Each structure stands twice: as C-alpha cells, then as structure tokens.
Length: 399
Image (cartoon, rainbow, N blue to C red; front, side, top):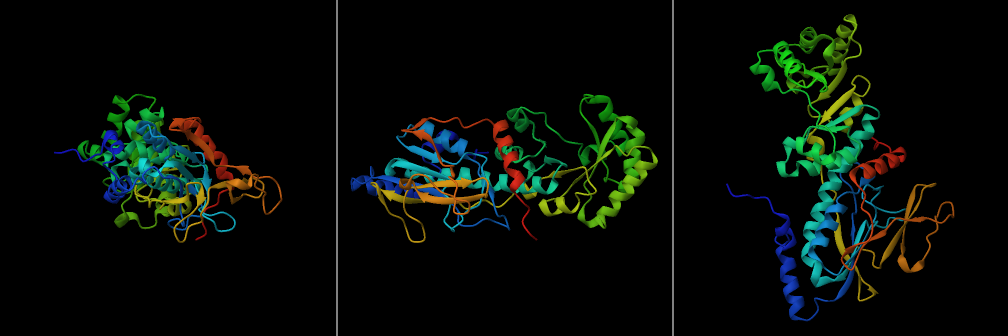
C-alpha cells in the first residue's frame, strides 16, 4: 500500500501546506511584494474543555523545520514546556511564538508549524491535567494504539514531559532513554487458557527486572483472578491491573476494596493496584484514593488540540493587524510572586507588574537569528523538570 505519511523532506518542500498559501506566494512574487518584511505571532483565544492553562510544546520541531529551510528568519518564543494561560491579566492573547522575515519566504510553513504546535500542546496539556489529578500516583502512557503509529513517539514525548512515569511504546522509550513499561495483554491470557498459566510463563521467560503485574479481569471475577495470579507467582507478584469493561464494571471502587481485602488476608497489602480503560483526569481524580497507578490512553492521545492562530502584527516596521487581533510587536512579562502575565509593546522596555509593582521577567526569547539557532532548546529531561517546577501553582479546573 502507498505510504500516506508525509516525509520531512516533503514538509520542507511545502507539500503539506494549504494551497491558498501557494497561490498567495505566487501573486506576491508577481507583484514584487514577496519580500515584504513582517512580524507574525502565534496565539490562542481559548482552550478546550475547562482548561485554564496549557503546556506549550512543539517548539523543537518548528525550529528543526526552519533550520532545514535555511531561510533568513528570526524566531522568538517562550520556552518549550512553559505552562501559561491563553491571555494576560488584561485579556490580551499571549504570543507564544513569533516569526520575523520576508513573508513570501516562510508563508507556506504556517500550516505545518501550527500542526506541530497545536497537536503536541493539546496532548501535553491533557497529560498535564491527568498528572495533576494523579498527584503522587503512577501514570503510564497507554494511548498509542488510538492514533497513527507514526505519531507514537510524539504522543509519548508530550506525556513524559508532562510528568507521566512511563510509556508502553518500545520506540518511544528508546528515544526517551527509559525502559518501556507494560503488563500483559488479554490475548496472552486467553491463549494460555487462564491467568495462572500466563503468569507462570511470564515469570519463567521474562527478565526478573521486569515487574510482574497481572491483568486480572479476563475470564472471571477480578478478586478471584488476583488470587490465582498470586498463587501462580507468589512473592514475585508486584501488582495487578484492572481493565474491567464498562458493561461489567458496576461499582469499581467496591471491586477494588474487595481485591485489597483478599490481598490483606494473604499478607500482601504491598501488591499495587493499577487501573485502566477509558480513564481521563476526572476518573483519575475519582479513583485516586483506591489505586496506586493508572494506565491512561485515549483521553490523552486523542485529546483536543489547542487552536493556535498565526497573524501578522507588524509590516515594514509599522504596527498592523486584522480585525480582532492586537497589533504591534510584543514582549510578555511574568511576575512569579503574583503569578500573572502582562503583554506589552516591545518598544516600551521594562514591564512592571500591575499587582505588586515589581519588574517582571521577560519570557519571550529569541531562538533563531537569520535562520541560525542561537539558544539551547533543552533536552526532554530538562523540559520535564521545568514542567514539574511550574505545576506547584496549577490547580485542577473546577467541576
């Protein structure tokens, strides 16, 4: 079958753009206007669900794309991994990324650029709120089977940066420098004709360093399958995963309590309880008190995108914009003490916090100058730590 995945070279050649950008570029070239220098910014007006903040991701791929094009552009951005609201304290849209250069040179890259940012920011933000709901509990990324396999590492990178403890995808784990994490599939238990045979085989054939976690809901009551798994591998049993289908779920908390009661009778209160099957941040919060960890998939991998827009706000050094957008080249100030953002025209110099009167940190930084990278993007580990530091001030949206 023909490969329907766009290659990086095809993206660089502009083949993944919208056709109207090609038409516009042709017309501008004919009118000798394609070298008009503009300053354009990426913003969003609102967020999906009831999110109050978003986790900004995708900058690394945008930078890589523009490095490959070798265009004479300047790129300014907040750091990848920054958590921020869509608007500042005055309701002005916060520019997270801006490009300066001849418009005809980079016009065709608006579409893939927004694709990189919208998708990854959406996945990362969804994962961020799951992480927040889970608090200290273990969260694993199980969502790659819900999306195109080519996107698996992108999804898991966003989840890991947002604070997930592990990923199930082999390739994602390789790229992240961690070991893949998972349990066993129902198909394996069915072919082995029961949880006992499956767990004995797993215990016999799989490296002892891999934790023995039983999937305990294939043929019979969860409580009894947990006991069968315990009988099969004894002290080697680290945990159990309940993936009870909705048609059999009933009172899931009561089922978990029964499982814990039986484990207690066997002196195995140390066995971890993991839950999976349609969990999102609301369900994670609901079952936080009875579970030790969660496998989260569809709700994150298929999360709504953050609808970023890309708009010219300056042309030939003069402020200009379409209706509904704020013109002018902007800098964004942040006051850590008051946890507020403020957009200001870059020409105004320092930015003062409207709440406490202190000088605000400028969070928009130049990453590319004349097509060359001038600032370190940071690796996955450093971005992940940066996200964790910011999460202390973030709260779950009100129900």
